[in-house]
Image (cartoon, rainbow, N blue to C red):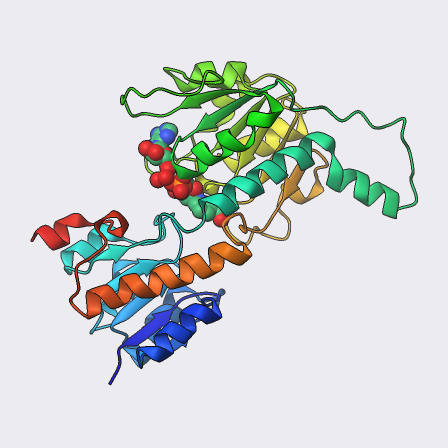
Length: 325
Ligand code: NAD
């Protein structure tokens, strides 16, 4: 008999489901609205060997509800919703799909940048309301402007490539001390303050960690140019949402484009919904025709490699200590 796989949230691509079927796996999909209590109940009932994580917090308690659990794989990159230490204590490998969605997020980020600085959603709303007012329009260009990239991993690097035809200057803040030769239009800055003071657009591409949590707060926003934009496709927690809302309400920055939020979904009365200088998308940066297939296929392959006792793709393993043990 095949393995039992539980998939949290909104499921996986049909190609990945097909692979599970070919391997005679039995699988069940949760619901994006599952609370931790729902997950505990569902995992207790289904008792999976493998867990593929889309939405939902995978605490130690949730992991403990699946007595036979042998592997967890994040369908995507940000593993901040998985208690990796708890998994390591149980000797459960936590894997992820690092190569699967950076193109999608980088393209989405570029789309957000162009949309917010050209005011496209706002113009669209106005024209539908019967206002065809060319005089009120004052869009800006990104040509030869300065892009500040915080976190120079797969997404930050790809975004930097995508803006090259616009002859943007790219300033990168990245904690690594590795020396590398970069194209002349990209330069590393020593501290985040320098990037905030010089960038016309600040784009966040670091993971959510204790160090990055609330990094873009009142103090950081005060260091930005008055007409600069914040673009966040990383994690909501990297920005202090209350401080950003105040800065947007008081027009202390030019605007913001957000794909991720402090709480997802944001509450219906979130003040962001009332602001014209912000555009919002529902955490879909990493979702595209190609990335969904990539993430689904990689997740299934990662989970099966552990369950079958095959050699692991170490680049996709978050807690190496489990294997070293
Ligand atoms: P990555 O691991 O390739 O790159 C992240 C980079 O951030 C790494 O190079 C790391 O060294 C750097 N970093 C760590 N701490 C930092 C700090 N304090 N300051 C600056 N940089 C720091 O990951 P990636 O694929 O580029 O993804 C980046 C993040 O984007 C993920 O962690 C995830 O939270 C988010 N993401 C969002 C979506 C979405 O749908 N919106 C999809 C995928 C990833």
